[in-house]
Length: 64
Image (tube, rainbow, N blue to C red; front, side, top):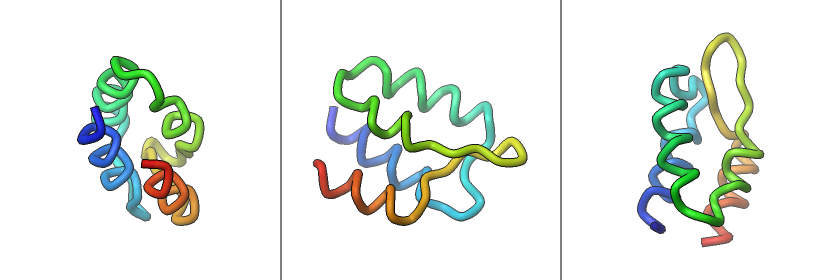
């Protein structure tokens, strides 16, 4: 579903990211739909926060 893909990218495109519990739920939703592996592969983690780099987010949005 395109909506979950867009939502995931927008949520993860934040310098503070999202917490681990939120990422686990988002990850579960993303894996239900094929074609979202690129988002999960681009996710970075630091200090219990999960996020996309600014360039990664722009590139992933362009794929849609």
